[in-house]
Image 1 (cartoon, rainbow, N blue to C red):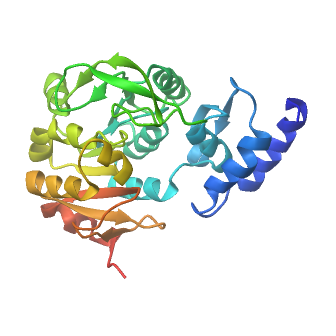
Image 2: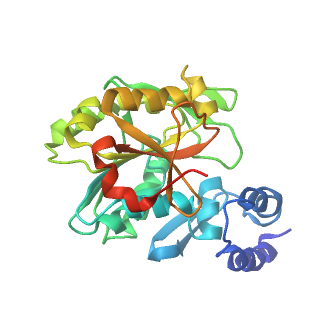
Length: 303
């Protein structure tokens, strides 16, 4: 099919999927219809307006960005929860900022009196991140081309070999990654907070393909001093590459900082999750035990 024919069909498909109500089924729409028949050949970018008025320049042949293009959002239940957990004036960290979508949602929520710091070490994604921040000048976001770990020594970033997916680069190589790597500058959150003289950190979102535990170990003082909400991806496959389980992450955060785990429902509500529960691929919210009552209206009892 030629691009001349694909372009109007792609626009019609986007109009039909823009308000698709559920997460279930999106992967099939992408992999069985969009990528085989409608996606343009790379490079192909388009500036679009997403749900909530966010403007982004998206690569129409990349997995995460294609979801944003088609559905106007990405992981909407997580975005709902994040917006409810944040408030105007908050300072938030986005670790694994990718091309900026979650950082932009956070910045819209915290407003002009708040601040978001977005960490993204991949050079290509960082260029796209900065471009998308330029398209949203009302959002106070500082982009940082840094990885986050438990030391400031440079680490290796391995490129994903999975078709269409530029968000799966990792510091933990697997059969899904190239043997080629680039060394990337790194910081710990404790060092970053100290060097910037931050007076508070209210929320931390982290999604770094299995390297979360190392990052947590480098923010122990920040977790203890500021008691932020933490939103972390827990993925059994990714965490196993680093030699630990999703249960180990929950246990460490409880023992080190008394953070209680909650799973996000499709509605954006939080449900208590047991320490022994494994996670195939979930975004999990961690709330300091003394702050749980602040968010009681967001918490539902497990069925």
